[in-house]
Image (cartoon, rainbow, N blue to C red; front, side, top):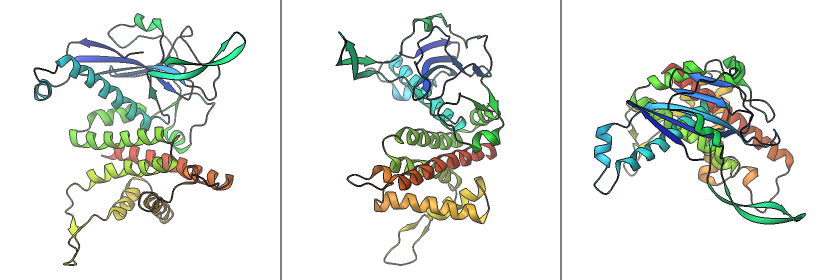
Length: 332
């Protein structure tokens, strides 16, 4: 289903169907900016809870694109309406990536295209190429403002319990009781801080999506999410150069900066410093030496224990990176 766009004065309302692996019931509203809500009972829903993609509606209001920005990009051969449509897709990506950090869930947008599917024809199975996507005629009933919906609120959990525990398949979609305050912080960031945080959110969201394809690339991506914030934290720090006259290369001290960030936005204990150092070392082994996690090894079996341990390490990494990003957002 294509996203629906409404313009009202200097604001744009973006409404679209997204998906979560966790069933959602109720709604959450942040001021007149954002609303997350479940679909009515008559809308198409998955047959089973486990292993399904559960549809939800996201409504997001944002300012129209800056006229100077339009003028600097648009040309006689480039229609401004195309630019506005592209901008809408970037705003859709923005809110999905921010929500992938603030909530515990990967929320994905509707993907169009074609796939081979199994069909039961004359009591026999046959493969047929079919278009994929989500369509519900009831979407047309919603207007140009955030929807007034008479439904219960999405459950909210104390933030320490919420972020301290992983989400498990079978549980319902929940939010932290700090969701609104975190959105307050995000929307009040200045341009430089917002760019840094949003870059980190994009890397985090892409890593979460990459997880099903490659544990190793997801691992690198989660660490890179933090490095996007580290770059901002050290923007005014002068980079030293190697004192060896035959070298002269910059000394970025990346590991040292990562450990300092982990101390400031994670935990300042000795145990956590060792843990953070282990994480960065594993990332370097993957990225620079090619020592992949067991899930990605081709032509070799590592065994269930190794694969389970690697999977738990990746899941813990995701949780820790999310907590450090949220702590950064809270403190800046």
